[in-house]
Image (cartoon, rainbow, N blue to C red; front, side, top):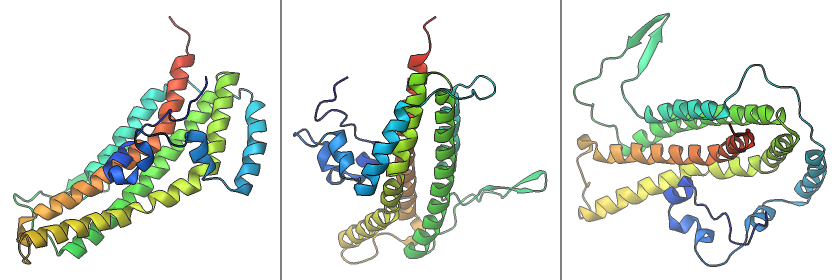
Length: 252
């Protein structure tokens, strides 16, 4: 299949969340295609790795099959659901705990306690965000490696696809992690911008009583939306691998 310039201009959920100014290449006018954009990420050492890796991709052969029948679409759905559950729990004041084998649930107050000062609340949420982000990365990376293992055992074509995915992961994973590490600073800028706008709207006074908690709900929503968008981005390669497995299955 011939890939034309301008094809594959899919805007990820993360790009949409960041806003139109964060994705100028996603507009309708002509721009660099996928290969040109990727080339801007790669240095001389990466080019050497790519050249060597492509030879290994071409030579890839099916390996041993994992035990049992594997439905990658179900594995993908389970991973997505588990991470979304983590994200939904971010900032929730009452969370289940365990003591030995007996589950202990902290009672939920009828009214949420007043929030702390904005800077403290932001720092606490940022700590939770970093923990969820770390656990998300571990689960998604493990699923992606497992998907490659499954595909590599099914046919020569899927073995080559799995090898290519492993090669691309090696080449761009570090750059991707560096970019995702900047999300907390973007969240902080959004937070400060909202506080500034609210303060100006109130003629220099605090826009709302801290006890109202409206600003904290908006802050939590920002953190959760950022994590959901990051999950969407991290899962995209796995979605492609799963689709390849489905399309390779014989009809009937």
